[in-house]
Length: 146
Image (cartoon, rainbow, N blue to C red):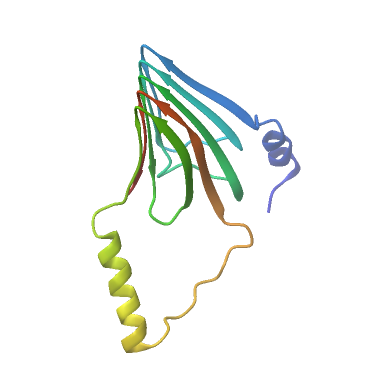
């Protein structure tokens, strides 16, 4: 249960933020609170955003990544829903899943078939979703699932 002071504090948080690296590097890691809309620009530099301990709000968190002769790398936990819709021109856009993701999925499906449906976990009303879009021009946008 939130008290009035917490609600007032949360109401003052920015809904948009920009992270820019030009001929440099920037990073966000550990416990941090991403805004609803995050714009990331890496021009001749790199930006690394680690969402594995980020405190994501329910619903959609949108990341717009732009890599021009640079790199944007996003680390996400395996249990976070991620949508990746980015384009590349003389660059690359990649989603790299952690080792064993396909094997683990197949193992889970085989277990269902042989042992029946597992107990259902409670479903959140509005689970977090990370929606990543953007463009890589002579650069890269990489999403690493951990």
